[in-house]
Amino acid sequence: MKVVIIEDEELAARRLETLIKECAPDSEVVARLESVEDAIAWFRGNPAPELIFLDIHLEDDLSFTIFEKVKVESPIIFTTAYDEYAIRAFKMRSIDYLLKPIVKEELAHSLEKFREFSSARRQPDMEALFRMITTGVPSYKERFSITVGQKIKSYSTDDIAWFYSEEGITFMVVNDNHQYPIDFSLDDLSVQLNPKEFFRINRQFLVKLKSIKNVHIYPKSRLKLELLPAANREVFVSRDKVTRFKEWLG
Image (tube, rainbow, N blue to C red):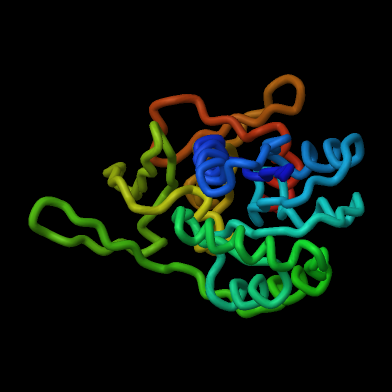
């Protein structure tokens, strides 16, 4: 069974590949793709796999964009952190969905469903699925509770400046420059936070509009951000996000 994984978090992709091999020893992951652009190029130059594991929110765009550019007839199992209304759509229109973090038992169940449907080549209606997700009424996260010693502190998104990831841990930075580890990945936060206020600028940083003090233009269209409070490292917008970032800035 030839499998393609489309996932922009390397650790998540590697872990998923390991779980797939454990659940289906006869499987072969023929490609791990990180972006919409990579996926489009791969599908144009390679035969369709027997199964695709697809993350919805990729680094450069929503993964639905792939299917606007290339025709893919493989069954799909979604991997997602989207909320309940979207999950209902996935369940209706795909082989299955796996809610992150992926559990081995649930993956095994999804693979069983795939085997049941594989002869029928059941395909999700990508246009209808995209429409169901984008026209739903989103409910964005407004508060975070943090345990500090023997106390629980609550911060609203108004108190938060930016988030960053380091060595697999996500940190929340508040306006007074205190930093707290939180139990959410940047993938999770990208979906849960209001996209008008927060933007995932690269693999490590998700920033709030009001926390951007200055945007410095570098050669080759690179953008460096000056944040408030200041980060202890240089913060650049990924090249493939520059256009969307400028649009987000207005």
